[in-house]
Amino acid sequence: MKKFLATLAGIGLIASGTVQGCSGNQPASIQSPGTGSPAATTEAADTGTLEIRANGEDFVRQGFTSKDGWKISFENVYTTLSNITAYQTEPPYDPQKDQDLKAKQQVKLDQTQTVDLAAGDERAEPVLVGEVNAPAGRYNALSWRMVKPADGPAKGYPLLLKGKATKDGKTVDFTLRIDQEMAFSCGDFVGDDRKGLLKPGDKADLEATFHFDHLFGDADVPMDDDLNKQALGFEPLAAIARNGKLDVDMAGLKQQLSLEDFKKLESIFPSLGHVGEGHCKETLTQA
Image (cartoon, rainbow, N blue to C red; front, side):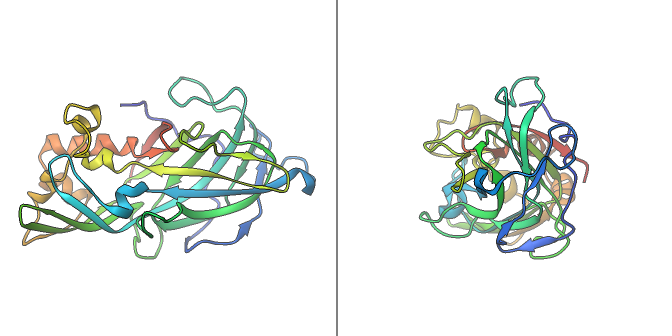
């Protein structure tokens, strides 16, 4: 399990509420690295549009089979994102090494937003959280926080998963209400496409990716793979369902799961956040 990260210095909460749906182009909060003060004005010709997207991958849009054979489909997967900051770093930031994130340029999305990662089908684009006018350059690091929304369908929960699981003729309708706030600090996006290269007058995107197979495991992956060995699976959750229903928060999970399973669940949360397949550092903030 990766080391926890103390929340990045200088990244404070700016928006005061949860915004449902995607907003339009936002003014960039451009900061001089290490000072938190506005940088010199950037000429319009040297800027472009940087999109920030959130992706729960096909696991939440299409459903999948857990490591212990439960077929899981999701109605909603709500997460509330704040303090989203993109960086141009030199040297490149590696979250798996003990190094500081040294940004020669950074830009923040000045909003807090709840998104539904389960929205759409296999053809859906990752959810657009927002976009900002940003100085051109190579954005090769991204950080964000998952916070408790003040209102909306996931009020009070940084992460809320609602869906259905079936196995051997049994069905469990579940709602998992995770009230633990989290923060992620990530390096370069790893995937088939290159992201974050913003040219003047053009558009580029960065992606916060969430790997829910780390929570439930994946039947398509060998059982002795680290992914499945570390995953909780769905069977422990099915065991505490009543009359085919499970609606539970962290306090309920702590009370009803075995100590071993609850500790495993807690240990999984820091590995949810990625940038594509790129890894992040995380910290868990006391709820």
